[in-house]
Length: 124
Image (cartoon, rainbow, N blue to C red; front, side, top):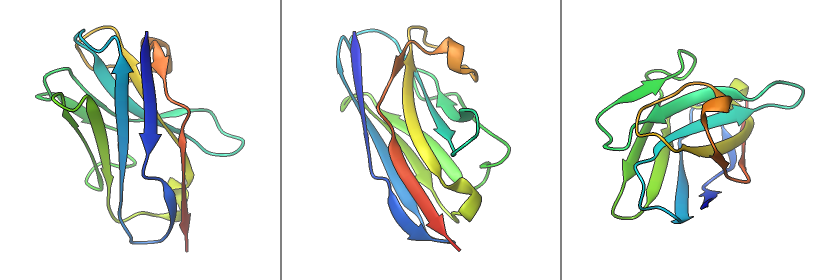
């Protein structure tokens, strides 16, 4: 079992930056790829970014490419999402997820473990 806890969300203005963190605990000795997803009110959960176990391979959704960056520190069992140039349409609950494979994946069904989410609200 892997427990994921997100932090770093909040209320910001358009153009501001935030860094989300996701701390993993429990059975973290495996080679887990990680992902960030988000869900806005009335919408389905959507892919934001993913990173492989080593950190060498990342993929970002087109909607955040060039503005968001996923990274990880395996010594700290933590994954980050640096979000720059935030827009009102980035407003959502952001979820961290872990999969039991080392390679990246873009769909929710590929991930076995989920955090409780952290709210990001961007005002115009």
